[in-house]
Image 1 (cartoon, one colour):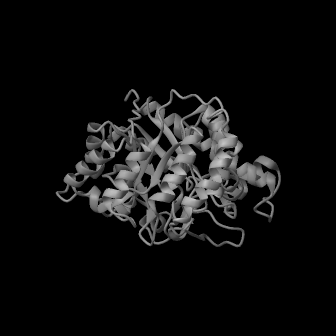
Image 2 (tube, rainbow, N blue to C red):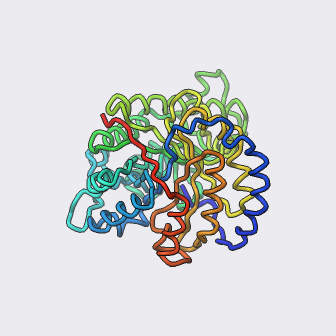
Image 3 (cartoon, rainbow, N blue to C red):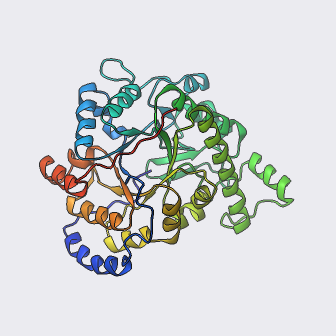
Length: 394
């Protein structure tokens, strides 16, 4: 999900801020353009497999959740589905034959259960993050056991290159795939006292795919035409995007039927990229009431480019309807990000009335170019007061 934009952290952001401040000041003459301010600001962080050393240790989880609470964060998005595996004991996975092992805590405990308990003690919302969506490694048990679930390109090939390396794609139009994904998500909201679930830019399909026999036959039946050779053909693109949207309607209904108060959160890429390259019409998801929360990934080191993305019309439209925020890169192990860059981007987002979520926990302060104390002081300055989020858990 989060590895698309690698960059260098930069002190040049201190200068970039001065350039953008004049733009922001002019554009924001009326602050956030009438955006409802009664919604608590999203202050979230993703917990990834890179954070597993922390997640496996009850004491470290307790310390981490306590630190997030003291720094006035309010939401966590722990990974639940990655590389064809789930991070909790799953009957659905076992029945499907895709889980030869289970991620466990240091003392054999259920990591997700402990995380939910510890987070709620600190007043943090917990939304399991189905990171890989329809994407999976070609060597995973999921793919080995269910090759018939895959879709393909027009030339018959089945792989593409992503931030996670070479991957294949489950066919989102296939009933069996939809049933599996729905069962997995419903299991999570049934098994744990979570506040919602989240899907990112991989709950989609690269536009080059969809030329498998099942999808071709379905398209031909419904349109009386064969799929065009050009994967970017507008009608062909829209038909596939609409099918994914229809599935998301079913998925949300299934989640709400099991846990009516659950937040259905999405964290896609910016809209033009998401729709035209990955068939992910997330603006339709907002307009149709599918999404309860939106976090747009904007992993860009250049502050001007960052600003241009967060002021786009579709972001403004979304924030009039639902809690909306921006995904910000806090750093990677191979590419650390300065606190100056993080603060500059957060403040620009806050000026627009937008919340934020950071990728990912360990890079907030443990794996960073500055000291832990300096990093935590930097976040404290961004969030000096609490922003409590609460929902009725049902």
